[in-house]
Image (cartoon, rainbow, N blue to C red; front, side, top):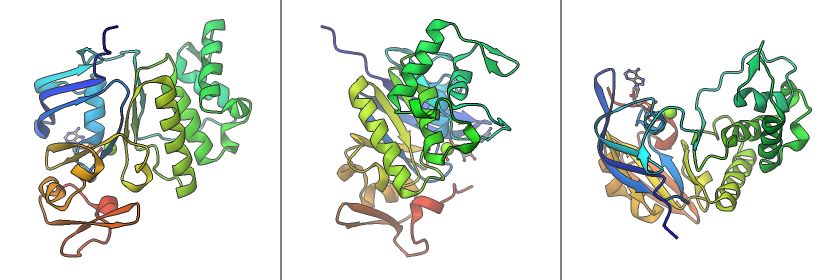
Length: 270
Ligand SMILES: Nc1ncnc2c1ncn2[C@@H]1O[C@H](COP(=O)(O)OP(=O)(O)O)[C@@H](O)[C@H]1O
Ligand SMILES: [Mg+2]
């Protein structure tokens, strides 16, 4: 049997926004069944990279290949959970209708799905253990449950690559752990690739296969122990960084102590 194409191949990729290079000279390959944690300071380009993989930001140079073909918009094999998820006045829409609203067939904001569409909605709800949420109004479910429904939306159409942009934002540590564990379980069971961006490394420890760290327009990818080092992160942040370990937890700090936890609050330098 022919080996599956890599989920993502970047070859000398350069991504620009408004004429400014966000990432440049990025070469990396992500396997068809890898869970990759995408880390890096605010503004490093995590969202831009995902949008490029979705075909929404063209490569200004180099190549972006997704599941063996050039990145293109609307590829049904790629599922996406965007970072900015406004909470529109969805009133008493049910969990099922919320998931179905991403499956197309809208009319006056309500999904009109055929039997196949309804089966697909039931399938993804089951995958995220969200069948019990199907009939509940969205206004009454918790943040962690909402994340499960958003994950269900991203799983519609049986994607082979999932792009999850900061799904842990605004969740408490308990719910963060639940989301990470669920994504890891689905990723291994379905045999798919996942890019999972986050502000903090520690919630992803033990779940990710490799880490992709972005900073200063560059990228480093590899096992956590190879990438999360003082010299590597100093290069990516463009300033001296120290890495400290306490048991299984890792802390990334500015070496001069100017910021207690750089992972959470660092901003792009202008
Ligand atoms: N439309 C735009 N034009 C120019 N620069 C932009 C635009 N949108 C975002 N940026 C900049 O691109 C950089 C990368 O942003 P982003 O990919 O959102 O980073 P991250 O997701 O890692 O926080 C940031 O410095 C941001 O200010
Ligand atoms: Mg982002």
